[in-house]
Image (tube, rainbow, N blue to C red; front, side):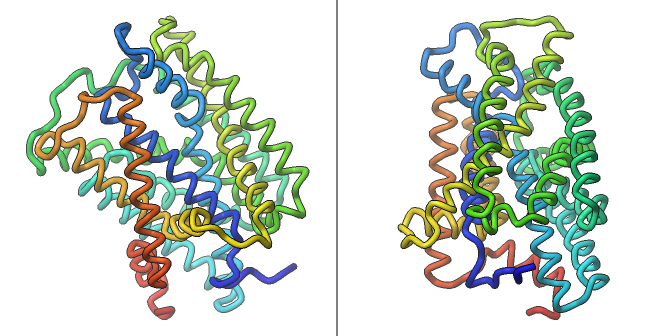
Length: 375
């Protein structure tokens, strides 16, 4: 097997995918600014907002997180490879377990201090529960991924069919009450998000074992088929849910659960299709001189945790009633524009950090906590 790339030789595709993926995460999270969570648009929505909501449902919702989860699983395999050379199999597994525990701790702090929609604790939970799958056979990984994806789709499809969980309730107007409210939903959202992410997480492990993104040119046919099929399935499977979120369809409970389940299940395919498409883009860019845009996106991907947390700082400032209190003041189109703006700022800051040869602060802290001897 070829040796894993060093920091200076890191494969382009995984970092490029993380940098682009954070744009989808920003688009998904920015919808909090609309004042709605799962409720469809009201019948009086403008044409622009209706079109924006349709695009978000078709291209972003339940598509960004599967891609993120797959990249997380992919990254764990890369960490395992590099640590086994230095620490051996047992030492490498201990590193992964410590990483899982610290990600859970980061996620709890993230939730309490900044934002409800945390995924770090969920990914830490997956690292603790499923790290043993890093050495599983490919067949076993795919079977377990299929089972996990089916369970996740059914569960989240039911959640999508529920009424708006906020029920129009007023949000707390002081920081302490807001933090306590976020903390109360953590025991519910963390296992739910972990279940949602388990399927693509296992697929990411499977892909990393075959180095699909580290050598995309050698897997061009598989990546192309995955990109075309996955993105097409993601679009088609989201059509019923898009009709619901834009207010054109008001299904009964059973039909709403079916639409949500189909939306989530095909979202796995869509997210993996996005990752494969970025792998193809990386293969196209290989050997070419990197542009400033490519370099900035890669810098963002290498500092993905820091950029993700920086987005949450923006949502705290923009959304909380005791700060700018923009919740419910913009429609889907305005929220999407703000989300892309926030992502663009993080990309720019990451590019400046790369130019100064400085790591992301969250990544540096996590590494010091997980591997103090590596400082």
